[in-house]
Length: 133
Image 1 (cartoon, rainbow, N blue to C red):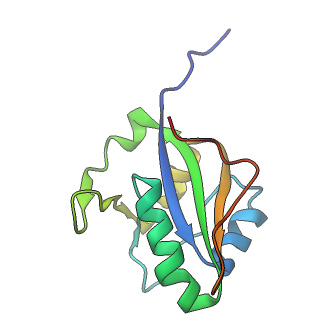
Image 2 (image 1 turned 90 degrees about the vertical axis):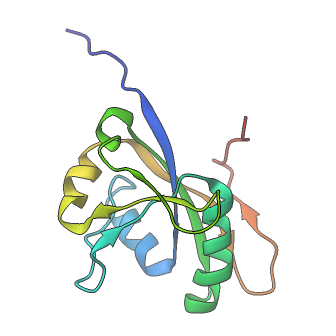
């Protein structure tokens, strides 16, 4: 029996080194549980916004910032309305922390690092990065 290909949506998430280490420990397949003070997991809908957060927030906060990209089942993720968190391109999904395990089960393929930012450095694109179309 063959299954139908899953339609996916590409999402990005800016992370610091601690969260990235937990993603790596999952085999690049899942996001770690949220901390008690983090009731929402928020992936973002465009790479530019993820770059700005990784560069402008993660680097000052933890010395390095990474941009990750991953695919999620589009039918499943449609349950989360797009949230506009600022300007027109500041778009996020707000996934309640208690739903993160189910969200992780709908990730298709690995979570990939596409950019790395450090203080006073230019962004480093990772080899697995694919050009935008």
